[in-house]
Length: 200
Image 1 (cartoon, rainbow, N blue to C red):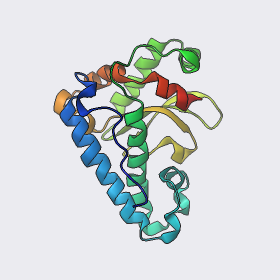
Image 2: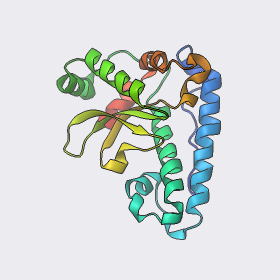
Image 3: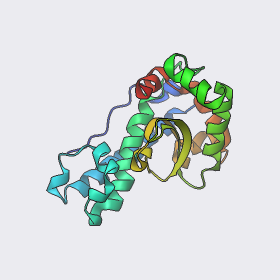
Image 4: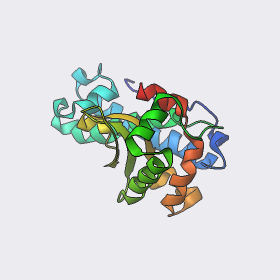
């Protein structure tokens, strides 16, 4: 298999009480696992895609044969997005970021609190399923964007520094239909060390 489901870097229950163990298990094993299975099924139809990373595939979607392009977009995006998502969360994490990413957030958004408000607002307003992101844009600035479905900012030439999954499968068992409560709680599990690496 060209693409593989990465293991979670912590136990399913490690992010309790903010994200429950059952959600983490279903989200990782079933949802992310299905994206990997479907991505492999798509690339197996074209031998020339076998050597490409999932990142390369979604960055250059126009180079992917048309008959599998939508499958690669959805499942390759889902694989890349979730592989990042597990890493930028951790138990006993959260708080305010320090280091270069903390400075850059304050410089770009005025304060960390203002950044959180804008990030949560973008996540709340994403209609249907999707993601909210902190990105470095093509011209090197920090910005908050949201994308539909499993689209990734790399598809538009931006670099995703961090992102939160606002599909209902990420929060529904615990937060029901109140996405805003999930977005607020999520800051308690953000792994700023990993976000700092992605920023650099």
